[in-house]
Image 1 (cartoon, rainbow, N blue to C red):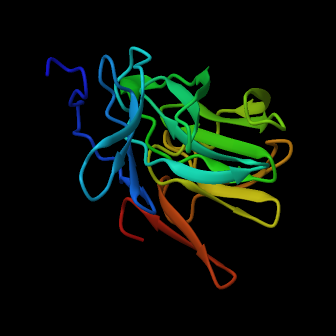
Image 2 (cartoon, rainbow, N blue to C red; image 1 turned 30 degrees about the vertical axis):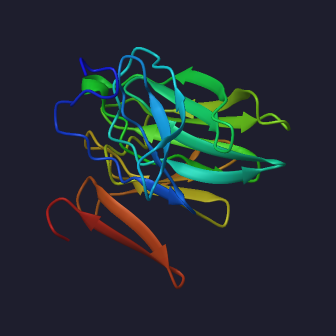
Length: 207
């Protein structure tokens, strides 16, 4: 199709598709189709968003309820985008540029705010979503918590995750972005989850 619907990227399209009832959302990153909602039974196109000139960015999207809107949040190669999940309305696009166009971490949403982060020293940005969901404004940014692909978690007002370029594991204040502490006991980068009052951190060296 000449890349209209999708183009492969350096390390392969690794997005985990998001299923919502009878719909499945995908970030194809094509020249004419950036994101699409398909009928999961037939594959029929329900809606599609015209391309922003970027490929996909290895990101698995999230679906949130913000006020009266259901929003699909995801990352393309150089941007953070927000879409009305029900109508396919393209709401916003905000620049978030990394080396090698890797934006692999799913956005993290809480109480009207959304946090995005990427590796290679790019770090994270915090945004406040407008009440109607049609726009965002940046609240803060920082470069130390720059997880390449291990994501981050929010626990009791603090964001936890690993740095990419030898920055260690970081704890940030959700509201301000200020670093609370840095730890290097289990290596410098990896993946993180939270369960039953514990952070489980798995480093690249296997600890």
